[in-house]
Length: 338
Image (cartoon, rainbow, N blue to C red):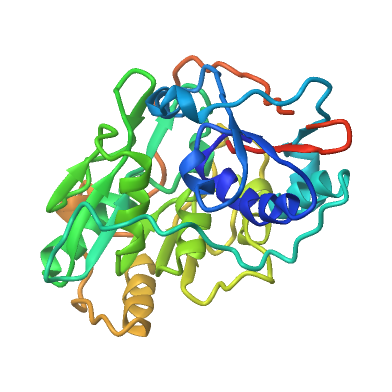
């Protein structure tokens, strides 16, 4: 577990662990735990975005765990997700060192002021991408959906639209058109804390399945998640928990979410009433959207929700394993994410 979102999922367990143990935490995202009394252990792996953030940290931040420290590997995979959920898998790992959590509070530290300010409410668009390290096009929504919604919000004039991603065209690249936005940070311009501060002050966050799901739940921000496929791993029941406050999140799903486990499967991802779902969700928030959907021109001549997915470019993939560490009598909880 080394991804941004997975480390948010791990927070309530790390919080519970520090009440019982001295915790040395190996993570590329120390910003997520800045309010907890943990010692950070340097993380070095081949994952591009994670490694960039590790290298940004001052050398003085990192500490070495004591010799003989007990190691706790916090991870999940296909067997754990098929048998339960992401949070259940993480909970089962922490049980090994006698740590339990009821997932409350499920939160994040204060991330400070937003890097974007506006008199209008801010809508954050998490652009759809693919990356070499985890090549999973089946999970993504149809490529026209997120840009189409972004254009609809932009044209509607209610929101200040901000698009975010961390692409470099070689290791991670956009899928579909570049979202129309008033502000675009698509090349990793925002540091993690700035990105989270943007979300913390947003009135609406839109994206496919990814870090936006746990982050918006933790920051209590309205979140509209456009599902793709790969439902065996990404169904809302797999990536949330009934104990979490899900009152501000909406999952827009195909009538039958593809239950496959194949990352490059050609899932049926069509959502016939996508704009209508967003309109109803926004109205629930007290934000009235225009009654018409984005123009068909913004969707390659196809109406929102009526297209089938073109095959995504497949690029070479690399795989790495996740490891972590803990102390003879004082377990070191090490966490991370995909």
